[in-house]
Structures are given as structure tokens and as C-alpha cells.
Length: 295
Image 1 (cartoon, rainbow, N blue to C red):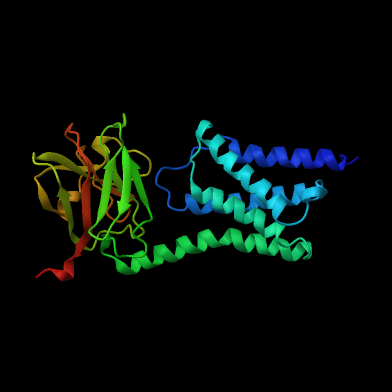
Image 2: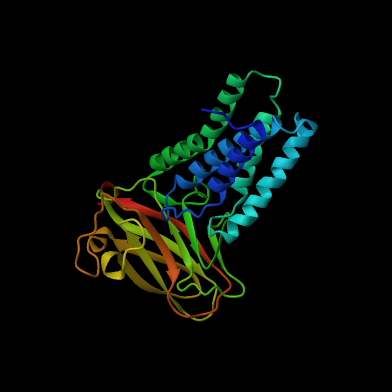
């Protein structure tokens, strides 16, 4: 079989890389490994792009000039991903730039060693995620606490942004207000078996001088289960710190009457139910009470 000329091979390989970077992909909501796999993919794809381009463009073949070109391309790809429906983030840009740097900085080294370096770099995000999840399992029954090393991971925001602070997790709504209903935050726990627990406890600071209605939700199924298929409890908060405590026996059944699988909790979260303008709310530590902790 006749091989394509070098220029055509470079063009075809580059087109394949850009197709993989820009094609719309629907990822599972709340999947904690997705960010790690996305970072690894960006490392590998931009390393491949650097390999292709260094063979064809001798003027920028070696070193930092090729890296600058590829770093600019990575930034442009992130901008285009916004219009193709894919997620946009600094993590993907850094990963792509790092993958390109791994190739550009090692042009004097044998190809096999360079390949091992790229694979090792691509493995780092998954290794970090695995380490943080193991630390979170060791801290169980804590579900969220700002002082924990893993506290920034696993969150999903709806209609605003979450910031970790010393006192807790501050949720700031979008300005102007997002069309999303029920602004709040949700978290995917690393420890998903809640069967040996007694109660779910949370503290929440509400700054407004008028009461508001908040909701607490627990899912045992992936995606977006409908209201009858998930646990949901509404409660009123007043100005200052509010303590919420829900016995696990009450979590055991959905509004539709289905038993909630306490051995397979996929997600929990808090959100605003009442239609009120607000500046922020602060979510304090969230934890489960183990059965042996109570008399």
C-alpha cells in the first residue's frame, strides 16, 4: 500500500487531533474521574501534535518556539470548545501545554524515552485523583470540610460559583442571575456507602434578614433522577448559622415510595428553593453521624 507523502500525513494527523479535541462529547454529570481523564487526553493529544509538527517545521522545530505556537493553539482550542458545547477550563490548557512541553524540551532524547515521559505525565492527573479519593475515604464520615485536602474536588455548581474559605464553602450566584432554577451546589462523595450511619448533619449560614427556603437532595442513581426517584427535604433558614439534621432512616425512601440505596449514594447537595435574590450563602462542615458515635 502506497504511503501518503509526509506533508499529507502531518495534515491528516493534525486533523484527527483537532477532531478529537473539538467534537462535542456528552460526559456523565458528576463523574469525578472525568477531569483526570480529560487532562490525560490533552497531554497525549498535544504531545502528538508537537511530534507531528516538529518533523515538518524546521524553523520552529526545536525548543521553546514550537512550544509557544502549541500553547497558543491550546488556548485557541479551549475558546472553540465553548462554541462546540464542551467544557472549558484552565486544567485542560495546562495539560495540553505540558504535553507539548514534554516533547519540545526533549528533542535530543530517543523517541522511546520521550514516549515514556508523555505517558508518565498523562498518568499524573489520575494518580492525584486516586490519592485524593483515598484521603476522603479515610476522613469518612466527613462529607465536606474546608480544611480537608480533598475539599475542592467533586463539586458541581448550578447558577453560581463555589469558593472554599476558612469558614466554609461560599456560594456566589451568577450576576446577572442565571436562568438556572434552584441555584446551589452538589457533590459526588468518594465514600458512597451510608448504611452504617445514623444522621446527616450540615450547617449553613444565611446572610439575608428575611427567611428563605433551602433544599437538601440525595441521589442514588446517576444523571438527573426525577423528584419521585430521589430524596429531597426542604427547610427554612434564618439570618445567621442554621443547623440541619436528617436521620438516615428518613433518607431511606424517595417521595415516590422507592427505597433509597444507602449503599450506593451518587450525589448530595443543597440549593435555594424560594425565589429570592441573594448575595451568597455559606455551607459549613457536612458530615454523617456513625451509629457507634451515638448512645
